[in-house]
Image (tube, rainbow, N blue to C red; front, top):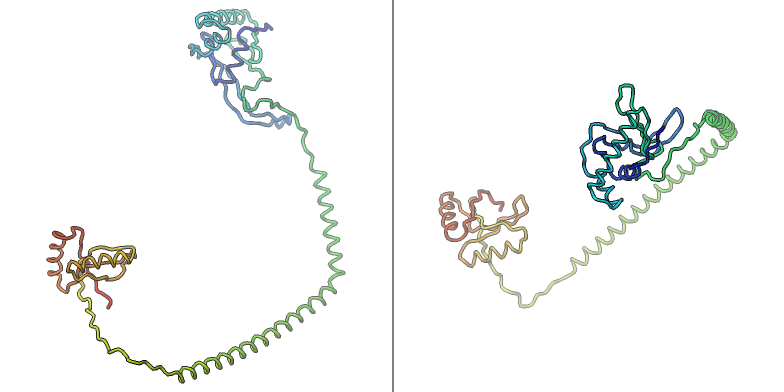
Length: 317
């Protein structure tokens, strides 16, 4: 087997950084992530890694290998391309002679019976940087049959011991339970009697306190010197089911301010309550006649408030 050293180190470095590394005029190495796996037959655990493949169809130069070679060797891009051409030419020649060409830490090339290039990746190299330092390992299978049988035997012995203790302890538990029930019944009865006595005492004391308060009220006299004369106030009652709304306010204080402003302008402003949205409604006036209300609404919208509107609602007086 012919060991080929040229450019193998550069290709290996790039495979850790890129998912595709093209050798111009020859083919491309492709990497594909795979998760951790277990070989059940050999009991081998493999860490996460990248599967390395080779595609003969991708030969167009993408500049990655040539640029890397030029930067590492300190040569020009054209000279790096020439080195790659020499590499691929020698590689193709060795393969045509039936030799196996090995790229260290990458894999091996050979021709099959149909004279097509075949590639076998290196099994020792893992190009997944997240798994750096992890390696596969073999773990022997775990035999649990004996342990399970021992657990079953221990469980049987425990059940038998419990049943034996249960038989010997039953008479004592029986009498203890009877005594406990008797104590509970006695305690409940005593508690009920105490509650009845407390209720009777509380009721009697309440009657005494009510009687004392009533007698004090009857004995009290109120003397007012120079009483003020009676004052008769007549409040206007809001009527009408047609209301011209000036606004609705979340805070009642703001509604009061609005009503005061309208009253100063000569309107019979009123608060007609809170609507279903929790807003305090202020109206310019209320009317029995729908026609009269509409005529006033037009005037108010033209001279006072274009957002005023008519509410039809019976007031709960």
